[in-house]
Picture: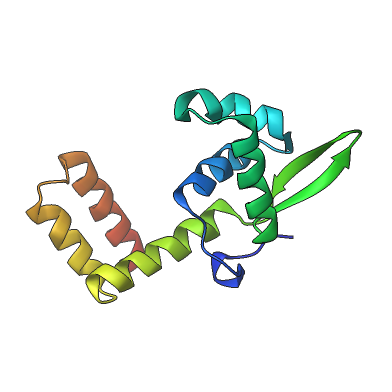
Length: 129
């Protein structure tokens, strides 16, 4: 069963999000396997990963299942639901709920290249049809 971020009791921190990205890419995983993916790049230790996994379980974003003497972790929260919720919150908080204001800001900051603009135009055409 999956749920949206709106149903999750607490927000996911940036560090927890890094763990979620690993689990969204492949699961179920043991803590040691998660650590293999993130510890080196982030300078984390196994206890850090276990703490983050425990927080995600407590928040209802990740489920566990016993596998011998270890636990396997599987995301309960779908990546698309998380991204949708976070995107809506960002637009609401920073741009008064107006997605057009986000695009205007990106355009003013020259943060959109021609490929980005073409993709946005394609998405807008799909929305209109």
